[in-house]
Amino acid sequence: MFEPLLMPPLALLLIGGGGWLARKRWPRAARAAIAASIGLLVLFSTPAVSALLLGALQSFPALDEQRLDHDCGAIVVLAGDAQLHAPEYGDASCGPLTLERLRYGARLSRASGLPLLVSGGAPRAGVRSHAAMMREALERDFGLEVRWSEARSADTRQNLAHSASLLRDAGVARAYLVTHAWHMPRAVAWARSAKLDVVAAPTGFRAPLEWRLSSFLPTSKALRESNWALHEWFGRAWQLVAG
Image 1 (cartoon, rainbow, N blue to C red):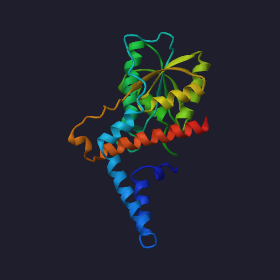
Image 2 (cartoon, one colour):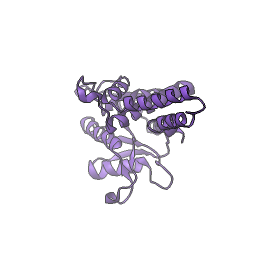
Image 3 (tube, rainbow, N blue to C red):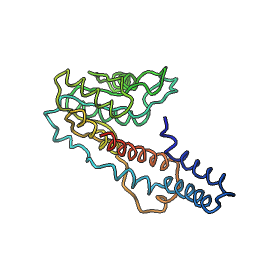
Image 4 (cartoon, rainbow, N blue to C red):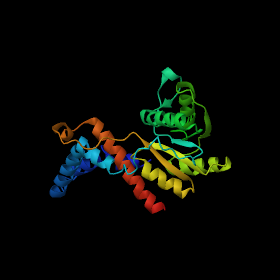
């Protein structure tokens, strides 16, 4: 609920707006706030900064599909986002991040023969669950059966706790975990907290920094990727506090 207040551009606009309102009473502090808000907005909008922020989170390497772990009994795919207005599908449907994860989960399922578990609750009230959208995409578009659907979770911690419970009931002690490379460290930590043994199967890697002029020119794509990274860093900080 309060996350948008901590993230650019809104957080930076609030800082700059506060500086503007305080310009007469505290002119020096006001100028510093306005300069900081503009400077940070520019920084977070550059591909160089977004690449560094995301790259620092990508600590798990890509899975070697030639050396699959035969102790795994399932593949867990976590939801990422949703397209709430998708009239061509007749209802809300998977967003781009979720589809990246589903594509790799489908590939891994075909390579390993393992059953799939999809995890994600409703993105908001009155909308079907992420898990329902993911099941539909996998079954209709990828031609794969979904063995388990976990549709109660509201965040990564609950994703892994509820998925672990489903797998334990099915006698599965170890599973592949599919999510974005920059989300994987937090997801693996919550899996361990839920006593679920997982093998990281990251996807959606963001390319390393390229030292060229365009890497230092602000873009909306870079700002979006900086938001993903900041969301993860805030999430990891909260994870340390929550234990």
